[in-house]
Length: 110
Image (tube, rainbow, N blue to C red; front, side, top):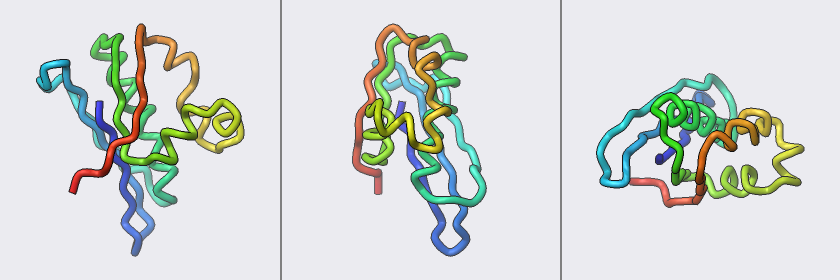
């Protein structure tokens, strides 16, 4: 699954979207969500929508690629995750629904 966040600097509008593909690159599903006004890091809660999509599609082995290195580090860090305002969106309970889950940073597509 690839998740991208975006912010329109003039308006402060943020959003997130993602695609879910199988191991052969075949389309399983996707999502796009308008998250209102905020900072781009707040758009990292797009992972919540992506994980829910994967659960809905009965995916249990997943590699998540995010374009926000900061978001990846926050999600992976137990200390920072506990104090970040969006920490509750990516609960351990949701992540524990997967047999295997790998989270990694990727450069944003141009």
